[in-house]
Length: 210
Image (cartoon, rainbow, N blue to C red; front, side):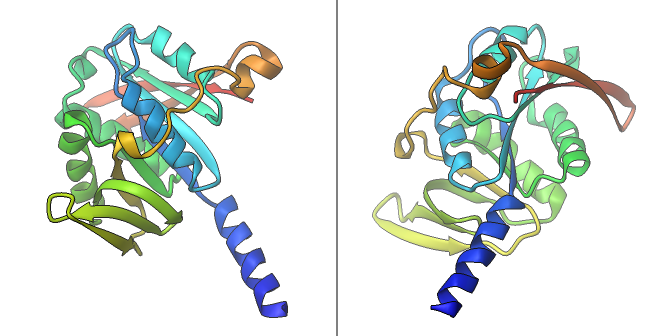
């Protein structure tokens, strides 16, 4: 019994230290549905879930994400360079964000957007990405399909930062209402944080949803 209690305490402590960054896919004024499924997957990891919205004129998407249940922060970066959500432009921003906030996990939906972006991020972090997960057993153990979906594989990931894409149909969409920002304060507070990389100097606007 003592051993079980000790393991339970360790697992609880591990969950508290998790911090997941969900890369939001959107069309400036509309959030891609798969992002909501990805948020649900991120919530299974425990710890804090943050969403990064990069683009131009994407305030509405950020406001909508603030209302999603389980999202603690919405980070917004607007610049002409992010128009079109090109992986080459987004990767430095995501790396800087991960470094600043020390995220343990980075994820996106397993769409064309996520499949193009995440391998590049993983390569820059020098970690192996996990693609198309269908379940999460623990913060370092994931389930995915192999052999064109004909077999299921459980993957234990010991990388310093876990980078993975989420199969949208395997997770329910997160509720688009009932988020803590709208239910407790009715609005998001704003903080401005400076991020520097390459020749750009950007401000990430952080919306803390309490």
